[in-house]
Length: 192
Image 1 (tube, rainbow, N blue to C red):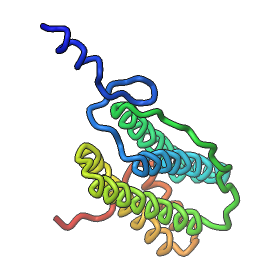
Image 2: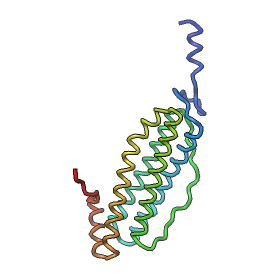
Image 3: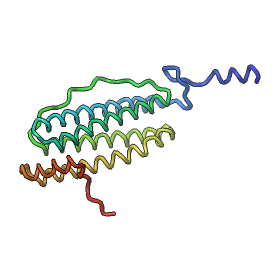
Protein backbone atom coordinates (compact mmCIF):
# COMPACT_ATOMS: atom_id res chain seq x y z
CA UNK A 1 0.00 0.00 0.00
CA UNK A 2 1.17 3.48 -0.70
CA UNK A 3 1.22 6.26 1.83
CA UNK A 4 -1.55 8.03 -0.11
CA UNK A 5 -3.87 5.06 0.37
CA UNK A 6 -3.09 4.94 4.10
CA UNK A 7 -3.82 8.62 4.60
CA UNK A 8 -7.26 8.31 2.95
CA UNK A 9 -8.27 5.81 5.65
CA UNK A 10 -7.23 8.29 8.30
CA UNK A 11 -9.59 10.92 6.86
CA UNK A 12 -12.78 9.02 7.72
CA UNK A 13 -15.72 11.03 8.99
CA UNK A 14 -16.16 10.80 12.75
CA UNK A 15 -18.84 11.83 15.19
CA UNK A 16 -18.48 14.08 18.25
CA UNK A 17 -16.96 11.27 20.36
CA UNK A 18 -14.50 10.36 17.61
CA UNK A 19 -16.38 7.27 16.46
CA UNK A 20 -16.21 6.52 12.73
CA UNK A 21 -19.45 7.06 10.88
CA UNK A 22 -20.50 6.01 7.40
CA UNK A 23 -23.06 8.80 6.94
CA UNK A 24 -23.56 11.88 9.08
CA UNK A 25 -27.04 12.59 10.43
CA UNK A 26 -28.96 15.70 9.50
CA UNK A 27 -28.78 18.11 12.46
CA UNK A 28 -32.56 18.54 12.79
CA UNK A 29 -33.08 14.75 12.58
CA UNK A 30 -30.45 14.23 15.28
CA UNK A 31 -32.19 16.77 17.54
CA UNK A 32 -35.54 15.08 16.93
CA UNK A 33 -33.98 11.70 17.82
CA UNK A 34 -32.70 13.14 21.10
CA UNK A 35 -36.19 14.50 21.86
CA UNK A 36 -37.77 11.15 21.03
CA UNK A 37 -35.34 9.33 23.32
CA UNK A 38 -36.47 11.71 26.09
CA UNK A 39 -40.10 10.96 25.23
CA UNK A 40 -39.46 7.22 25.65
CA UNK A 41 -37.75 7.81 29.01
CA UNK A 42 -40.65 10.02 30.10
CA UNK A 43 -43.15 7.29 29.15
CA UNK A 44 -41.14 4.83 31.25
CA UNK A 45 -41.30 7.14 34.28
CA UNK A 46 -45.03 7.71 33.77
CA UNK A 47 -45.78 4.01 33.51
CA UNK A 48 -43.74 3.27 36.62
CA UNK A 49 -45.78 5.90 38.48
CA UNK A 50 -48.95 4.20 37.18
CA UNK A 51 -47.65 0.85 38.45
CA UNK A 52 -47.21 2.35 41.90
CA UNK A 53 -50.71 3.91 41.82
CA UNK A 54 -52.28 0.54 41.01
CA UNK A 55 -50.17 -1.32 43.60
CA UNK A 56 -51.40 1.10 46.25
CA UNK A 57 -54.98 0.18 45.31
CA UNK A 58 -54.44 -3.60 45.37
CA UNK A 59 -54.81 -3.95 41.60
CA UNK A 60 -51.76 -6.14 41.05
CA UNK A 61 -52.58 -7.03 37.44
CA UNK A 62 -52.69 -3.38 36.39
CA UNK A 63 -49.56 -2.74 38.48
CA UNK A 64 -47.72 -5.62 36.81
CA UNK A 65 -48.83 -4.48 33.36
CA UNK A 66 -47.58 -0.94 33.85
CA UNK A 67 -44.33 -2.11 35.45
CA UNK A 68 -43.69 -4.18 32.31
CA UNK A 69 -44.65 -1.24 30.10
CA UNK A 70 -42.22 0.96 32.03
CA UNK A 71 -39.47 -1.59 31.37
CA UNK A 72 -40.43 -1.78 27.67
CA UNK A 73 -40.13 1.99 27.35
CA UNK A 74 -36.65 1.84 28.91
CA UNK A 75 -35.72 -0.74 26.28
CA UNK A 76 -37.09 1.53 23.55
CA UNK A 77 -35.00 4.43 24.86
CA UNK A 78 -31.92 2.18 24.97
CA UNK A 79 -32.59 1.07 21.38
CA UNK A 80 -32.62 4.71 20.27
CA UNK A 81 -29.42 5.37 22.25
CA UNK A 82 -27.77 2.33 20.61
CA UNK A 83 -28.79 3.61 17.18
CA UNK A 84 -27.38 7.08 17.82
CA UNK A 85 -24.11 5.56 19.01
CA UNK A 86 -23.98 3.30 15.93
CA UNK A 87 -24.31 6.45 13.83
CA UNK A 88 -21.35 8.07 15.61
CA UNK A 89 -23.48 10.48 17.65
CA UNK A 90 -23.39 11.46 21.30
CA UNK A 91 -26.47 10.53 23.33
CA UNK A 92 -27.78 13.45 25.40
CA UNK A 93 -29.94 12.56 28.39
CA UNK A 94 -32.25 15.47 29.12
CA UNK A 95 -33.96 16.14 32.45
CA UNK A 96 -37.30 14.43 32.91
CA UNK A 97 -40.30 16.05 34.58
CA UNK A 98 -41.75 14.36 37.64
CA UNK A 99 -44.52 12.05 36.37
CA UNK A 100 -48.09 12.71 37.36
CA UNK A 101 -49.03 10.57 40.37
CA UNK A 102 -52.54 11.72 41.22
CA UNK A 103 -55.47 10.22 39.32
CA UNK A 104 -59.22 10.06 39.87
CA UNK A 105 -59.92 6.77 38.09
CA UNK A 106 -58.52 3.83 36.19
CA UNK A 107 -60.20 5.18 33.06
CA UNK A 108 -58.34 8.48 33.43
CA UNK A 109 -54.99 6.63 33.62
CA UNK A 110 -55.85 4.46 30.62
CA UNK A 111 -56.94 7.48 28.55
CA UNK A 112 -53.72 9.30 29.49
CA UNK A 113 -51.65 6.23 28.59
CA UNK A 114 -53.41 5.78 25.26
CA UNK A 115 -52.71 9.43 24.41
CA UNK A 116 -49.08 8.97 25.42
CA UNK A 117 -48.81 6.08 22.96
CA UNK A 118 -50.48 8.16 20.24
CA UNK A 119 -47.92 10.93 20.85
CA UNK A 120 -45.02 8.46 20.61
CA UNK A 121 -46.43 7.11 17.34
CA UNK A 122 -46.73 10.64 15.98
CA UNK A 123 -43.12 11.37 16.98
CA UNK A 124 -41.93 8.23 15.17
CA UNK A 125 -43.83 9.24 12.04
CA UNK A 126 -42.21 12.67 12.17
CA UNK A 127 -38.77 11.08 12.52
CA UNK A 128 -39.50 8.87 9.53
CA UNK A 129 -40.60 11.84 7.40
CA UNK A 130 -37.50 13.81 8.42
CA UNK A 131 -35.27 10.83 7.54
CA UNK A 132 -36.92 10.53 4.13
CA UNK A 133 -36.48 14.27 3.44
CA UNK A 134 -32.76 14.01 4.26
CA UNK A 135 -32.38 10.77 2.22
CA UNK A 136 -31.27 8.91 5.34
CA UNK A 137 -32.25 5.35 4.41
CA UNK A 138 -30.34 3.93 7.38
CA UNK A 139 -32.80 5.68 9.67
CA UNK A 140 -35.93 4.68 7.75
CA UNK A 141 -34.79 1.04 7.88
CA UNK A 142 -34.19 1.39 11.63
CA UNK A 143 -37.61 2.98 12.18
CA UNK A 144 -39.73 0.51 10.16
CA UNK A 145 -39.97 -2.27 12.80
CA UNK A 146 -40.12 0.31 15.60
CA UNK A 147 -43.19 1.94 14.06
CA UNK A 148 -44.86 -1.46 13.58
CA UNK A 149 -44.37 -2.31 17.27
CA UNK A 150 -45.58 1.13 18.31
CA UNK A 151 -48.80 0.83 16.31
CA UNK A 152 -49.41 -2.56 18.01
CA UNK A 153 -48.85 -0.95 21.40
CA UNK A 154 -51.28 1.85 20.56
CA UNK A 155 -53.84 -0.79 19.53
CA UNK A 156 -53.37 -2.66 22.83
CA UNK A 157 -53.87 0.51 24.88
CA UNK A 158 -57.00 1.39 22.89
CA UNK A 159 -58.31 -2.10 23.64
CA UNK A 160 -57.60 -1.81 27.37
CA UNK A 161 -59.16 1.65 27.50
CA UNK A 162 -62.28 0.21 25.85
CA UNK A 163 -62.42 -2.64 28.39
CA UNK A 164 -62.06 -0.21 31.30
CA UNK A 165 -64.79 2.04 29.87
CA UNK A 166 -67.05 -0.99 29.48
CA UNK A 167 -66.40 -1.93 33.13
CA UNK A 168 -67.79 1.49 34.08
CA UNK A 169 -65.85 1.53 37.37
CA UNK A 170 -67.72 -1.52 38.70
CA UNK A 171 -65.45 -3.32 41.17
CA UNK A 172 -66.24 -6.85 39.96
CA UNK A 173 -65.61 -5.94 36.32
CA UNK A 174 -62.36 -4.13 37.21
CA UNK A 175 -61.17 -7.19 39.14
CA UNK A 176 -61.83 -9.37 36.08
CA UNK A 177 -59.68 -7.07 33.93
CA UNK A 178 -57.05 -6.99 36.69
CA UNK A 179 -56.98 -10.81 36.67
CA UNK A 180 -56.62 -10.85 32.89
CA UNK A 181 -53.66 -8.49 33.18
CA UNK A 182 -52.12 -10.65 35.91
CA UNK A 183 -52.31 -13.67 33.60
CA UNK A 184 -51.20 -11.84 30.44
CA UNK A 185 -54.62 -12.27 28.79
CA UNK A 186 -55.08 -8.67 27.68
CA UNK A 187 -54.43 -8.77 23.94
CA UNK A 188 -57.11 -7.39 21.63
CA UNK A 189 -59.24 -9.87 19.69
CA UNK A 190 -57.81 -11.03 16.35
CA UNK A 191 -59.99 -11.78 13.36
CA UNK A 192 -57.28 -12.98 10.98
